[in-house]
Length: 327
Image (cartoon, rainbow, N blue to C red; front, side):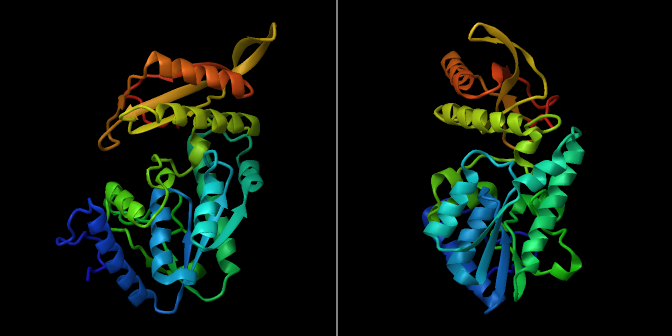
């Protein structure tokens, strides 16, 4: 049985590439988790991302109702994500799921804030505060589940950024349960498939901890945020049809306006900027060539259906010098 107290990937842990290997890993983690937790209760912050979702599904399989998941909707998630978390974990897996609608709380704190790092700090602190408040309402919690994966350990000594709840107050300093801590992202996806999670969750693209908060460039307004959410859904749907699809693709809506014409009248509207890149390590990245048909389809759908948008642009910048995200 592998040693989960170490932060070094076991030498005898073979790459998980097949369903058979994933199932063997799952069975071992069920045994390890049950031995660690016993009859104790575990709390998990479930963002709906790949890592936290696979962690949650594995813990549900291991300890069932001893796990309580908290999903905080801060208003900065992609279209349909909160609904999918509720459908998969509460309705299909019968998990103990606490859904927290904190949209107004987050957006009120972010109103008028245009500095990217300040936005990140506000989102991170507010997330911890909301999660801690929910934790204090529960009794008998002894363990904290986290979807830490091996690159997190290599890059940050085991502390996940943004959605990590390691910054909880001392009175909520629970023992960690990290069943996927020795896996790389591609291995996590194989395990997620073996656990029966839907493809839309297992193959979800990388998403920054602050969510759409760093893609709604500048000071976030609710109308521009909703325009971004709708446009992003269109961009991901259309570019996702490519074979092979790029490693990551999304859009941003900067805090600028330009003149447009609609129904014979001039008006001011926002641009949507499409971003599609390929990368092996996220240290460098290359812009992906998109066909004219794809670009014009995205343009026409966004202009026709997303209020407040009158231009669609394409970001062809590589990293370096441009970062993958705009903020």
